[in-house]
Amino acid sequence: MPILPTISTFFIILSAVLMAIGWYLIVHDKRKAHKRVMISAAVSALLFFIIYMSRTIFIGNTSFGGPDELKIYYTVFLIFHIFLATMGAIFGVVTLTLAFKRKIAIHRKIGPVTSIVWFFTAITGVMVYLLLYVFYRGGDTTSMIKAILGT
Image (cartoon, rainbow, N blue to C red; front, top):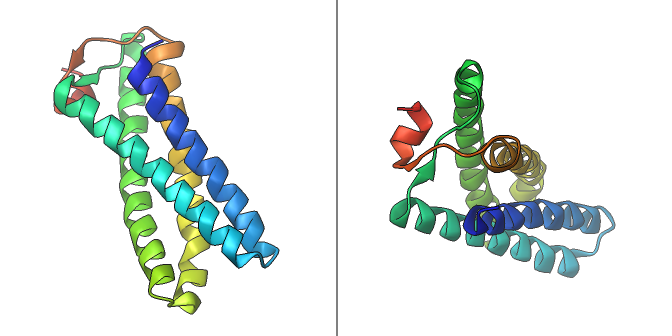
């Protein structure tokens, strides 16, 4: 089990769990606890990103090592995950900014959307991890573009 991908996947799972707790807290009108937990969720997501980018920059990314007939499905799934992660990060920054600027009415409207996008990001991220390191043996570690395109 490769340590850096495992650690970064842990942080993405933690961010989703904390986000779920934060959602529960706000539904029960526990605003201070909600704020603390959601900031913790954001920090956890940021730690994931720092580890992921550090690994990408210094080591590279692992290409899909499973059967060739599944490679196209994995690639489409990975692109979907990257799209979700990008949207989740953008929504996350906007949602946090709105909260810190006390624009709560707008924050309340996009917060649930942000959470749902992030839950799907976390789920697909865990699936990418499982496909690369658990279900199949990872392929070559190479640059991100080569790993995504499978070349």
